[in-house]
Image 1 (tube, rainbow, N blue to C red):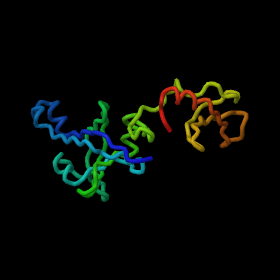
Image 2 (image 1 turned 45 degrees about the vertical axis):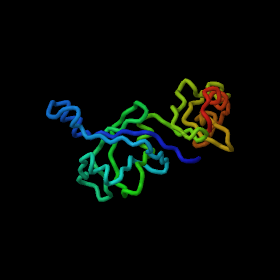
Image 3 (image 1 turned 90 degrees about the vertical axis):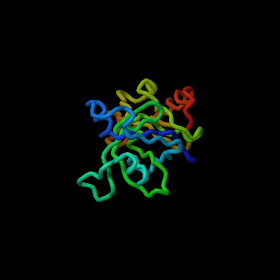
Image 4 (image 1 turned 30 degrees about the vertical axis):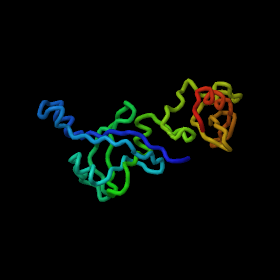
Length: 176
């Protein structure tokens, strides 16, 4: 797939709440911006090097033995979410895992090595020949994008497959 990096900003939630309550000024909100956050679809959480955790003033969560810290506001390409932080050594870049990507509604575009917006429900296949088929997901097989449907005419666990979604995604210029 190749290396995908993006700009990301992490803000201390504790500071944001203090600012909202009028206890601190906007310039006192601790924030970190990086231009080379690595998109890691094999990771689960947002992972920050120790030095950035200290810079944001984050506290370790009470029930965590694995170096999980309190949440930050993560902003990528104008979209924000609240996400817990996992600690990584200082020689590791900021890692954006699968949960932040899902919360921010991003998928990886491997051809352009960038983040993209996933297809919406309006782009799901409506041309399936199955009776009363219901779309449940999308998968890639042999370089072809396929819609997975559940149909009452098939056995449980045996989904119908339809390839008409491929043309719609191509028209959106989403590369897989």
